[in-house]
Length: 308
Ligand code: RIB
Ligand code: NA
Image (cartoon, rainbow, N blue to C red; front, side):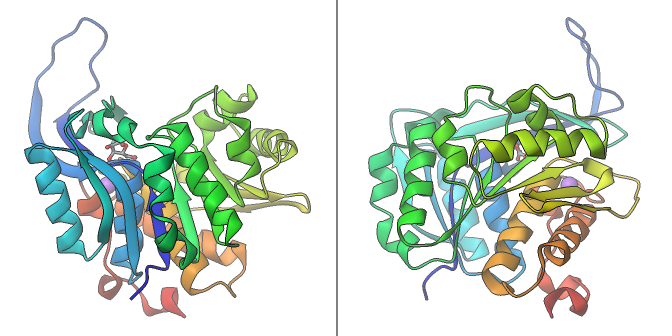
């Protein structure tokens, strides 16, 4: 069956070190645990939606190496359609060395590799997939031309576009904003794009207003433990999140975005406030377990009220 959600985005192999605190420049510290996991914001969002029961397809590029082979298997194991995941010999599969401290806070370096070999032409080949979908989701870990090609193609077929501009990039192509129905950023990404310092919900409102003037349909600013802000020309809605003690916040934003994509595709009648509340709920669950995709819940582990 056709995918309701198409994610045009990144795959990275996460190399995660758990340490009591994050290292300072020039410092060597001991870690107490290491794990290799499947990550990359695009794939994470795709898997988050799939775990909730969505039919999904990924448009991506991996390298011709063992990380790439394993990644393709991970997609198969999760039931993601991978007809448009390419393999390139020009670069290695993306990797993300990550450090996670005892407070669940993280630092990430991405070496995007094969992800940056994705061209607009690669995305155009996925037209039959995109055309049949309800939501196209993009992030900032592949080339901007590939992202823009995905968003404009979605628009051509009236498919909803959800753009998560992560990681932060102050040189973001303005056409990406213009082609985003929902433009989603966290506090630091909002700050990098608008130069508005974002520390409070009020600051986030100001940053969102700046982004709205740049032509996106609506803005979401995720606020970590403080939930999320949804902004349109009609005003702002702040959705708080439940307070928990995090174990590992890596990928929480991806759990949020993937869950939102699920609701947009499968429960379009819900209010945005409701969708955001439920997306915060799933993100909150994800911060209470280690890793990225490993911490994303499956539908059968979640309260039934989330699916009505
Ligand atoms: O958002 C978390 C993700 O960012 C990690 O999985 C890592 O791969 C980086 O892309
Ligand atoms: Na997690």
